[in-house]
Amino acid sequence: MINIEYNPTEIEALSHKIIKERLPNIFGCTEEYEIAVRVAQATGDIEFAKDLQFHPDFVKNALESLKAKLPIFVDVEMAKVAISNYAKSLGLEVICAINDPDVVKKAKDLGITRSIVAVRMVLEERKIGLIVCGNSPTFLYEVLNMAEKGKKPMALIGMPVGFVSALDVKKLLYERKTLPFLTNLSTKGGTPAAVAAAIYLINLLNDKKRYGQHS
Image (cartoon, rainbow, N blue to C red):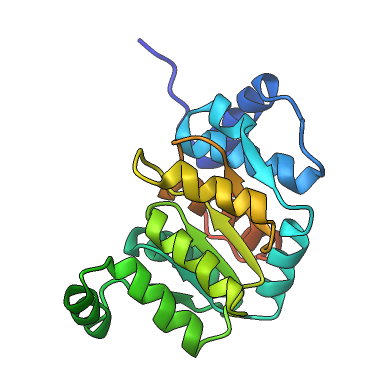
């Protein structure tokens, strides 16, 4: 018979305690370390969390964008659903354009990914606060291209996962340092990790969490 904890608050507290016993605080501030804890919690991967790379202005800019009520732009619907559950109490709009009919048609006509078209469309039309990318390398690459044209978000979580271009584009993000970023320098990544970081930042400003919601 195993001992199972049923209370969500206690489950989270115990998870954080275990992670903090294993994850050294090698980060620049408390918020960066707490983000790393949430990434480890979301992925079950301490080594992944150790590899997180923060631009010095990332936390400050991300929080300023949330306080300013600027939209959050995400690469996939999974991220939108997860983040919206927390963002709505702050009145934050979460945008995902991957399934927009115009995006789908144009991507097919041009023979490029929907992610590329979605980034072009949204950043041309809207002022974006925080971008959250955990899935699509081409999404992140196009964000960097648009930034070179002056279409910049205030902050960027860029952690696409995979073996095709994901690491290369994250290295480019890290080396350019033109955007306040959170990234990692391996093939690891994923929507759960990126979303966990975003939710932590939102909850720093959120005093209306529902019972059972993670921090």
